[in-house]
Structures are given as structure tokens and as C-alpha cells.
Image (cartoon, rainbow, N blue to C red; front, side, top):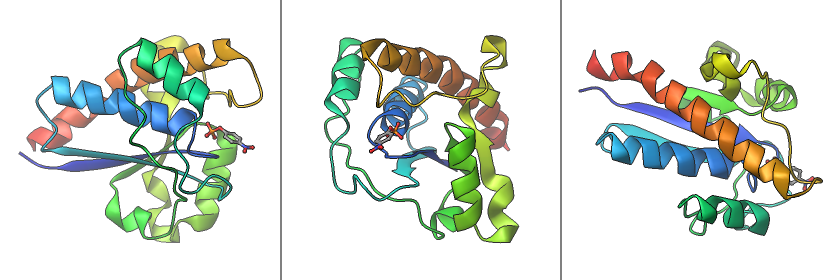
Length: 160
Ligand code: 4NP
């Protein structure tokens, strides 16, 4: 079986992308594919490097059984476009920032997470940082749906 690697990216790497990482990790574990799918996350910005996820993201995740506590924020780098097969962004601003960092031949690795949940008809995972707790629930709902779609999309590649 082949291996696939995915890095989720948002702005700060403390709310959305660590949530997506935790959701994807559980789906991959439950599918018995953890030896074949590597998962990471990063931010386009550098403000929160080294920090644990936002407490609101940790709390909302914990209520659904996701443990975000071991994660630490880092900033995306050009090397990540060599390391990972897919760079999965939360919103259009993330895509624009990623296009600045990506070696031009690797820009085709950039995707929007919500492409993998076409049934929701939502283009982006909105930034919950300056909002209330409901935003973190929406992030989890979107990540659960889209990561499930992403895993389904990866399965044929894993079987190649
Ligand atoms: P994230 O949320 O991109 O989902 O991690 C944010 C975290 C921090 C900031 C903005 C968004 N900030 O402005 O510091």
C-alpha cells in the first residue's frame, strides 16, 4: 500500500488547522490507515509559533473526543511543499499566502478543505478566532465532513 501525506493550513495554526489535524488523525486511525497517511498542520503566519491550540478549540474538540493538547503551532515553509503530497487550506487568504511560499512547480498541491465536502456547499472554513464559541462548533462540523471526504478521496491513491 502507498503512503500519502497531508498538511492542513490556516492563518495561526491554533484554531482551524489543528482541529482538522485532530479530526483527520482519528478518522485515519479508525480506518486502520495510520501507517499510510501522515498528517500535520501549520499556519501561514508566525504569531503563535510554539503555542498550544487556542483553549476554545481545545475545549470544543475535547467535547467530541479530540485531544488537541499535544499540538504546537508552526509556520509553513517551502520545504513542506516537498514533504507533503497535499497542502489543504482553510480559506482563500490561506491559499494566496501559500502561493507566495510554494515553489512554483508545487502550487498544484494546494487545495481548499471544503472542496472535499461538496454536499455542504461552503467554500471556506471561516476564521473563528474573533468570534464566539459557536464558530468553533462550525469548524468541527466542517472538518468532520470534509476530512471524511478527503479520506475517501485518498483511498484510491493508497491502493495504487
Ligand atoms: P486560525 O485562527 O487561523 O484558525 O488558527 C486564528 C488564530 C490567530 C489569529 C487569527 C486567526 N490571530 O490574528 O492571531
